[in-house]
Length: 180
Image (cartoon, rainbow, N blue to C red; front, side, top):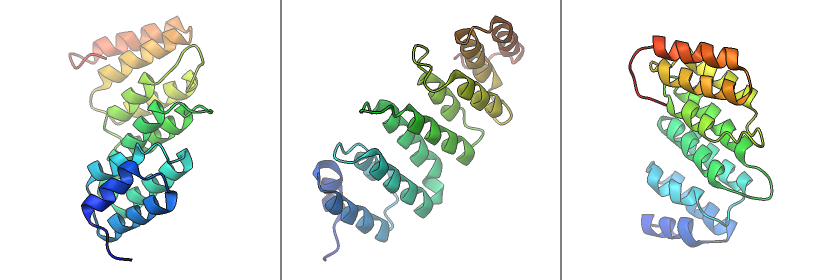
């Protein structure tokens, strides 16, 4: 098979519905050491791909280009957060926010985005899981105020007014910073 051009790869990522064709384009991009995340973002949004196929491509991309790991995992989390299918994809979204936080523990985005996807009516992802995730993040982020505000909100959603007030006060003690 002849080597695919970047334009051909892009075209397959955006419009192909055949997994083998998409896989061949992905392999060509990897073999050509194309590390442009914007190219792969269109792949992740291809409606023809299942959740498992998106995961396959994302994981392989993160292994191939370690410097892109954080961004790949954040992008995968955002894709799964936005996808509504027969089963809930919030678990996948949370999993990738967690992996992104491991790749860059001091970044606030994974913690904030994970808490943004919380649905209190369905308790998805489970509020206890989110609270533990944000508390873990407090160890690493420099902007503790924003995480404390989110923790106060999550504790309030869980009906624990004492801990909600504790984290609200902790946020005030953290000084001026970006608001949640």
